[in-house]
Image 1: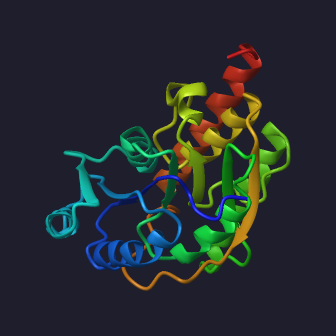
Image 2: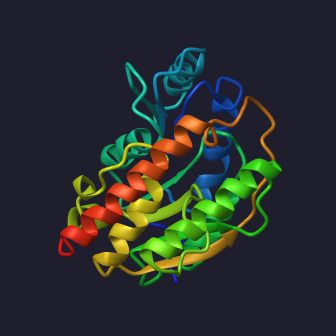
Image 3: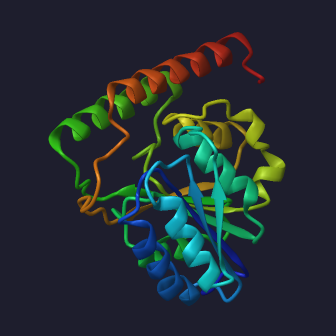
Length: 240
């Protein structure tokens, strides 16, 4: 069981999160050195139209461990996570969302389970979201279990730790979605490749700033479309 990691890349996607970006970076600079001496923190600004990108740039100027990726136009949630994974340089890669609904100190729960694992993914012990989002998530999780098999407690929980060499063995090009289905498709792809993925419960907190973006009808429709495309592709080409 590794008490500390031999290098950690932490990133989070941010779309119009000007009130959250500085607190997350400050929390990361305070908390994450408990888990690794060699640390980099990346803000993935996914085409924000508020001051998210400018604030992130200011934070990067203050601390060399902080850097920023700017998307000139929005690539979607999966596109932002993909950018963060590709840009990571340390042996371990950890990401969460830019909405401050997770406590970064809970990374310790994932680290405790990391020995012998290729990835450790969180599941929300008690999800702190409005009733509509909870219902959508309930339906979504069960649809994925029906079409791809069980085993995942929380397919889109944004609290995940990977060995970076996972993405040399299972290239990200295999994951086609750039929307909300990116995280479930990534887990499905890793499991099909035979990687060792463990699940650990983490805390979840209510959003305190800005509106949630993940449950809009457009996002949901795109996720269902990507889900059905993957299921059809795997039926037609099971070795893909």
